[in-house]
Length: 116
Image 1 (cartoon, one colour):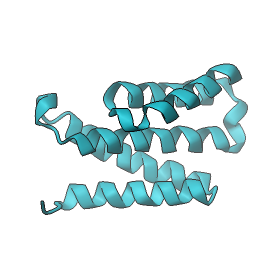
Image 2 (tube, rainbow, N blue to C red):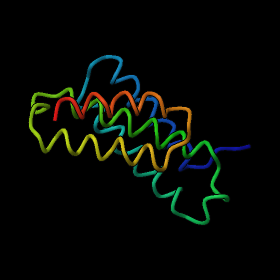
Image 3 (tube, rainbow, N blue to C red):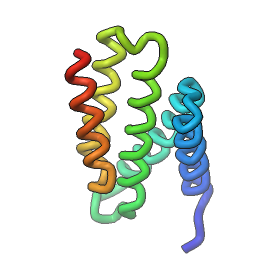
Image 4 (spheres, rainbow, N blue to C red):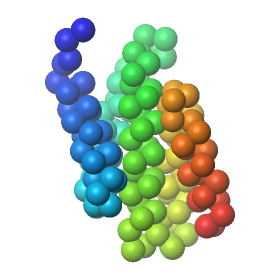
């Protein structure tokens, strides 16, 4: 299947977010994962869940994971509000994402809960 502009934009943002996490560039990771989250969120909410391609659930879960890792890795990571926001992001990834990233999201949720 041919990719449309949203597909390409989401894939690009998610790839850049993943690369930034790998490079420990937390600000870039947060920025790119936010873009990927927003694009996937919009697609996930365009119709009945059975009509949305499963890859969008995977993209949303991966973007949530990158976003939560990024925001807990910056200087303000010890602040309770930052940790609660990261946990909310992980929770959304668990609810709306597919099962491919479930284990990673659950590990991150446990880590965040211990920090709180």
